[in-house]
View (cartoon, one colour):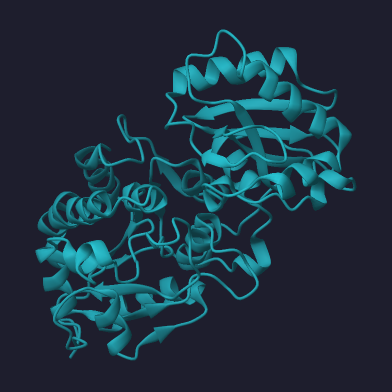
Length: 403
């Protein structure tokens, strides 16, 4: 069956970390199965449903890798690290031999070899508090040839000038959200390989554990380092004028690096309380003249990292009711929709997994896959598989134009 009038807009609606595995607390269901998602279930019944492998073999299942895939770019060719993506979001000017780290403010049981990672976000520290702390660390602890750049909440950047050929570029520090309640001795060993970096993180822990800190942050955690990111121009590559809408810097950085519009939404927090309506409004306004918009919601991922089954189920329900439903109501037949997550964030492990992610493609008149709902199991049952993950966007463009 073909479209009587093909849609002219393409919309990607991404619920970060939404996919999961069966959860005992949810009666053996996943959050996608347990959540009230009448709109996504209807679109799945009417649309094309399958699995997409967003994380190439050999790469870590981070949101940076997975969202790069969903935006149509091969991480195997373009990914240089998490830090460089967020540097692009900030518009930092990096020299070719600079190395940029993502830097979290974190809570550890002790900044010592017998310590454990307690909270990768320091209690989702407020931006104003973390900015003041990071600026203080920049004044009191920073080595020569290093620079600190405050970001949003717990997400900051540390730049090692001219370090591309030095040991900084080769460190293997684990992402803090991957090691909740795990020991940190191996990572401290990595920091010690670079005396200047070790001196900084050690001094920072002493300052943060002292007076004048109103937060739960008692250490900093540089990770995800790499050289500056470059991506092909999105419009030149795909023939669509595109934009991204997200609360998190990594998605903004990917968009900015690809020459896309980056739409800022006041009150977009990356949590359950994010400004859903503001994200929808920004996306719809852009689509008056633009062709493609990538709307990213972080809340399911955050709940997954927290091991919060009820919260993750609620995050999926809110995504359906407050993102998918109003976008569909406003756009109707003029748009094709792709709904997916970037990666799984299973509650049982409280970090990312590289499993293929469920996706659905909907446009009026598309031949349906014959599933009853939008769930991980339904997506697997169709037999439709898209790999590599960066093929999903061009395939969706073809489906939109051909029916």
